[in-house]
Image 1 (cartoon, rainbow, N blue to C red):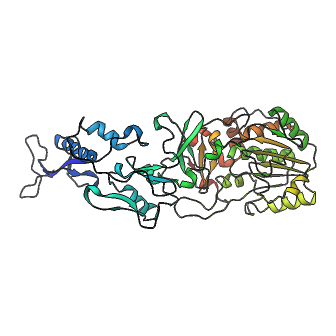
Image 2: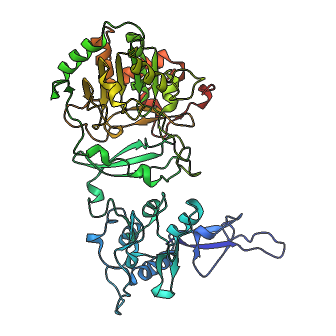
Image 3: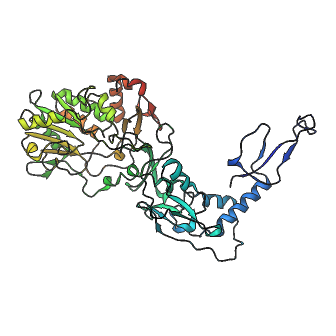
Length: 499
């Protein structure tokens, strides 16, 4: 479809360009259309992109592409974002001159755990083959048979199970490759799209979240040359279903007799449990999945309550050399910026054992846990039962919420605004795509209210107010605001020399 008319200047015996009556070079036009994406630019080259020859060539190519293509746009998942459909409207004919029987090819073929293939729709562009070979480094796709009977398939004994397989769905210009997770669930033109980024590891791939009626249907990569280009891994792409899980916490819980209470009553109960304690009796575990604004307020609450032991839960995996980082926490850098990992000389999580020992010995009588499961942090059920006060925020029930004295339901990454710093020191911005369920709130709102009710008065009303206070208190964010971060983020690596 990128056919053009191309030519070069005519030259005389003296090797100088021949000029016409108007003094312009005479062009020797090549009689056949040329493929523009395969041409190197040369001095004096002349190009016609919309000449009658180029238009006829594109119409001819479109006719060939549609000869065996099924007319199933009304039921195709690609409808609404299909390049073939768009080009057909622009260059196609109203009818077809093809009177033979269309070639039938395999339909609804599961070629991997996350991808389904409809070979009849394939136009043999080979984008998916090139991606898997050149980018994902897993040469598993290829063509078999010849002519009109060529089909896309996986190599014998293999399947498309790469952690980057869903990128082939993104780059497929038709509906040949479809996501099994998104297939037949929603028409794309009904989706409201929100720019955000993935919080499944420290890379922070830029994304677009597709939402309808407060439900997330898909998460796709957004182009950012400084972070992820236009790709993302399947793990991060599909790591959003927990947001709409039926077991989501939607109201504060008070124990020992488990019951739902109002948000105000939960704050009063938390104040009674946390205030009036000696320094060192309270410990804190925060999550490196929290935003900078939330971590900033957590550091202020730590100072207010005299907390001496504080740390994050490290999440380590294996880096794949493409996009997935070994650090599965999206904002461990932010936690270190605000001093919530003990000290810069200690690795994140190094002080968790001190928290466990302090709770076990009875030295620590109160524990604040934000966004983590204390059992996963090394605390046993017996340890937690011995605490005088366990106050938590959480999205889902876990080993700690079953024993906590007060539990505040919090918001997921797609339900709040804020910023994080990825593993390479890039500041990026989250945007709210859906609203949190029930009485769940942003962690920054819960932290602000805890600070206020524990005696550290605060006038913060919006996330912009929090960022303004954070920028005034920490030189890393000096002169910045949420709006200045922009859609592609800002590089702060030069401001983080010690990290």
